[in-house]
Length: 463
Image (cartoon, rainbow, N blue to C red; front, side):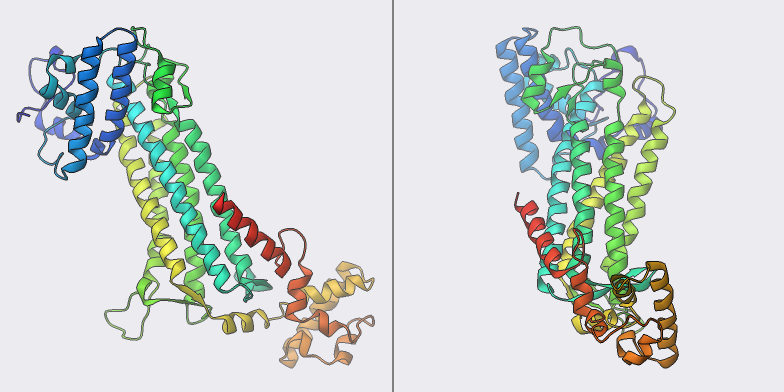
């Protein structure tokens, strides 16, 4: 290829673009990652032109063979794009094609615009990336379940308002995040459905003027449907917001997981231990072991949120149909995909390098009056109205605080002053094991329910 930039629109112009404008306008430095998707779509388009008898079989064969050769060359040569001077990946591919087969290559763009070409290649690329993200979410889910299995019978305190609330199984905590990630998978699958619509055949704005079978091309490319309005087909970027929105909620969940684990790894909690593989030290303080991997996981969420908002802002005032503003969708989505990908891989690695300090967690779950609700429930079962039971237990907690002991450490006579229905069996009910067993409704933390939930989660991963 010569040093002259290959463009798809030069006939109308008598002078080249200003160098600063060219730098501002060109997208090859980042949209080259659409190369394989664009070549794949171009092969299907060539076959569509063949079926419509717009180009001959011989011309179509030459085009398809040359496009496949380009794919092969790009795969084998790490520097394939490094020295090229192109406006975008689409002009790059066309120039390369013409170099190889001459005028037959000039016929490929018949019946399509760069507008529907870009949208099609981008959707193909996004579809593959969504599939990859879902696989990475499954990887994190697997690591969560493995962590739960390593500490299947361990107990930790659950928190509300960051205050100890009630005891739960550690596996129950792991499964809470599993549920969040399952919803993330659902959201990405829903986004994939909206991505998987073929705009090719929409032309620039009004549709193609050639008898190309859009459904046949869609089938070849694995699209579920074709766009039903040419104006919308070339200007729809809802799917990019769908992706970044789903990614934003995924990053919310990863950030919440990171925050929990940062707290649990602190000296104040000492619930979990992170291996040296996912920790770092201080340049000044020799004793430090910092949860940097978790802090980065938490921090990168804001980056994805920003990309999502950037897309919404870019789209909000655009008239129909295509506008160059839409070029800004690529970097936002590319960065989101990259950030989510490394974050998910990091999350799985962190979970694989995490262990629970079961004794510290159990001690915390057994102190701080976490069995107060169990005492209230006990009174209700003895016929005391709940509001009255709640009041009585509140006074019992205050009494325990003054005596410096837990509810289950009080003497029976001390407890009976708060309700005369309290009997010796109250101490069984105030035990940690009883507290867990009592939460046996669907979704509860009883050992039986948690075992069932773990089995169901494993089945989902295998399915």
